[in-house]
Image (cartoon, rainbow, N blue to C red; front, side, top):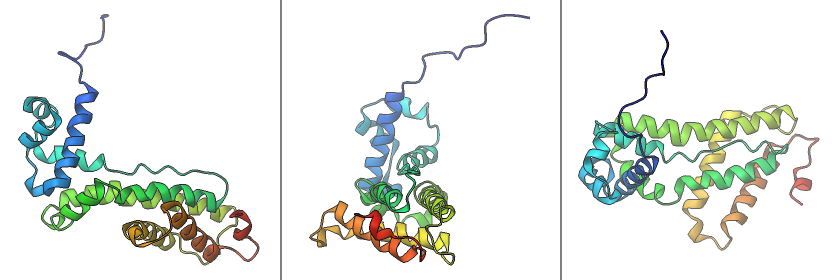
Length: 206
């Protein structure tokens, strides 16, 4: 039997509506947290009909989860060929985790995550674990190039680097240096501490 393949009935989904809704979810999470978020408020903020949301996300939980997933920083290993330049790029990308609206969402939702473990798991996987895996990828590349000391624990180093970048951006208003200067200084500290005796990270930074 021959014939044209079945086509989905009705209008195709409008990606602009999806984006508006998810942006509205993010703004609502920043304003009222997980507990206070309502589909009606999301619809009003997005400027769309409530049925446009419920047809896409029949369950409120799925809507919140997709909103959280949209916050992922989207790190991509630079693969520049040098550890220092890779980390400089990643530092700027990681810093987006504490930019608005992520900062407000963290502040308003962290205390609630214990009551919503399913949301916490998604946020941790998308915003933290993927971030860590990208940094580890860069460190493994550096290890293969001989830029890292043999005793460097990749997982520990990645955890410390991500924590240091986020921490420095959280208190950047207390510093006199710019964000780029802070990132560069932080990267230099890590590269010098991880360098093998035969590598010369100070030369790369010139």
